[in-house]
Length: 495
Image (cartoon, rainbow, N blue to C red; front, top):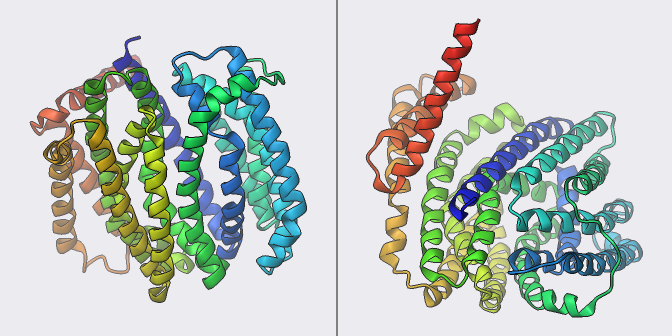
């Protein structure tokens, strides 16, 4: 399989998996939001501030190094697994003994038990991490998708069952552990890697250099995101952080469906051609074009219908998330560009520069959160957007030093998305002008009109407008549509 076909196949499978996973999470989340209260979600988010920080250290970035390396043997995988397992044991012991101190700091004794149980995941992660690295290196993303969907089903069903039975916040913790165990078993049956404890410091050091820089960059990024959560939790309480995390989750739902799939595949592809800057530059621009085309219509549609969707799906108690969610969505373009820039820096092993960018942005982001809290969650949301904009400009300048990328070329890559989504915005505005007042107070009817019309206009424009940058992509979708129509006609003929 040539590289282009491998990229397309990998993205399709991971996109299918991420979309399916997000649908499952979204569906189970609706049920959980009606059974549990915002404070339950807020407690989990608060714990993730601590466990998330250390979770990055547990892998040491060495799994990413295995994926990027030009060569990696079974002994490399076993040496990395051994180091990750040792780190996991040490991290669990640390959380077990420090849990009472954290609970006292957060002024809630329930955190002690929750942290001790939740930290068991650090003993499970090395097993799944090493299998994931092997599958990603081999670009076997179909198998990753199948296992992840299974984990999503197991976790979701268990969380809803436990929440309905009255487990409260424990339903979110225990279901996650159950899903992790199921995932480890599935990954072990999916890959040929046979894990053994093998101490080999030479191999660990070989992967540890890149891994340390990658982990530091991810740690600073996580510190910025979770530091905001900790500030909100400490200064405004669990309910506030529960609301903000839900708003941020919905605002970035389209990103979570598309970008993880694209990023994993493109990172491996850029790593393969890391010495070919022209091909790297092409992948960079192509990634931005397609991500914007696929992500922005969901952002615009969700932002336009946010109030109706939240009221219908989550209930009136969650309506305060609408405004901060819409504000965070404004930064969607920033997020697409800085993800593409980060992949270039990672594939080119320029992570030291990204670490500096993350450190500067960390200070700015936390300061923006503290200042923004004066205006409530909306102020924090604006702080997030401004911080994303700053970071995007910073990493773009870093990439510009590696690749001969002009600003005009970047804007050119964005043109198809601006054209299509401008048309979508005008369509939604026109339909709202015609039916908005008549359907006030009738959210289901409003959605039943806005969503199909907006979707039909965008899909038709994508498939049939003469946009050269999207010609090949649109042609593939038209061929798939024709194949489905032929298959449907054949099925009707047989019946």
